[in-house]
Length: 287
Ligand SMILES: [Zn+2]
Image (cartoon, rainbow, N blue to C red; front, side, top):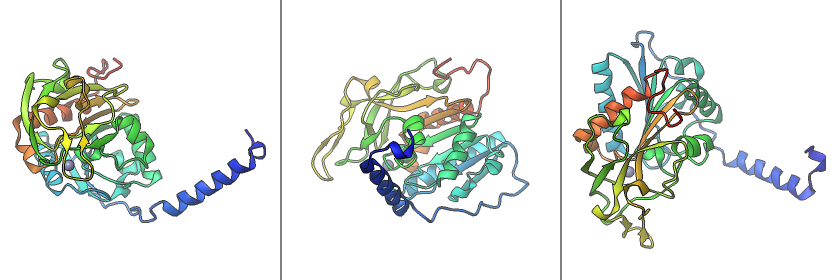
């Protein structure tokens, strides 16, 4: 449709919306890429923990330590930053795995988002943790809908942290090697608006009878049950957008998550799987 065939009201509405977007768009995106030494070992891990919404200082510290240890035992390079200007094609090419360590809010400019999407779909690997899958990423539609998927609707409060029964939903998946059929863990348990994950493989689900999935503290009482048993409440899953691989886990609010043997095993397996490039694409949903 050419512009002059549009009804006047629609033209005015679209103008108004573009003006509004211009006015609302953050203007202070990072624009100067970090200086990454030429001596950084290859391949390398990029850990990104910029926050413009809720900041998980404890969870960020725990994951930082985990990936420092990972770089240690794999011999890989490691670069940890909160500078979103690192998301350019030249610097991304130096990394095999990107970690969104509780990244929240509108942290990447549209150009940086595009550079990351191209890198991921052309064979990149992403591990996204806890707050990186909350409801503060709506500005980045592709990431929000196609990388994460379901919409975060809340977590329990009163109490916020609870021990729950976590169920292994994919015992044959490479990420689940050594993970028991079920285990107990304390965390801040996320609920989502749906268990329909599209082209993802659900790995872990919650037994909602094993904890109190309700917000009793903030605003009106909120029933956070998703229903349908552990399959109905996924909390970790994988996807393969393009040639890339993604692992998301809603666990990890606290530093202590990174002392939990099952979570350590899960993340180590996930790290190996996202950066594997086997012809069979074992573990990808469409293969
Ligand atoms: Zn949290």
